Structure formats: structure tokens, C-alpha cells
Image (tube, rainbow, N blue to C red; front, side, top):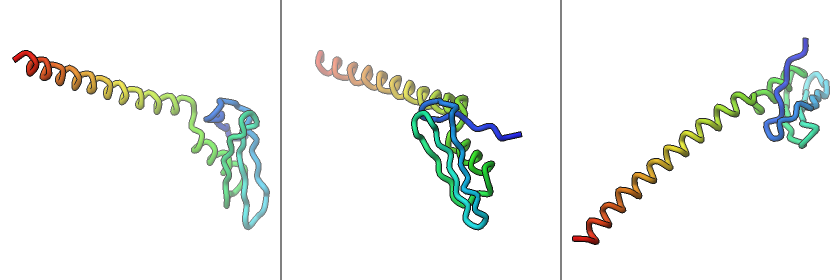
Amino acid sequence: MAKKINNCIKCGSDDIRVHDCGYSSFNCGSAKCRNCGNEKKVNYNEGIDDVIDSWNKYSPTVKVHIERLHKRIVGYKKNIKDTKEEITKYTRIFMEEEYK
């Protein structure tokens, strides 16, 4: 049974070409998206499974990608909240100074 290869991280396509040159001492290979051309090259691999493993580490599953984006969004929301609080704080200070 062949290993499952993740979709392309850039375009989401599942049309990934996996290549292994088949040399015994110096084996190189690559995985390349046929839709957008995104490519991961691998040197010194043991075969197709190593190429797929390398692609899958490079191109995490959609779930992993969504989790990473969610963490970034949560951080951005916190920064926005902190900025709003700072604006409110300095507006109060300004208003107090202005009307003394």
C-alpha cells in the first residue's frame, strides 16, 4: 500500500508528482505539484517513501495549516485588543489634561 501524500500547501491540489531517480549511492528525488509548480527536492533519500515523508513534513495537512492560522489570528486579536486599550488609556489622559 502506497503512502498517502498531502495536498499542496500553496494551492491545495492533490495532483502531486513524486520522482525518485533510483540511484543507489546518491539518490535524489522530488515531489512537485502539477497544478502550481510548488516543489520540494530531496537529496540522499532511500526511495519514494522518503520523498513522500519529506513532502508531508514540508506540506502539512490542511488541519495543521488551519490550526497554525488560528493561533496567528488569536494573537492578532489580542494585539488589536491591547492596542484599543492603549488608545483608550491615552485618550483619557489627554482629555483629563485638556480640561484641567
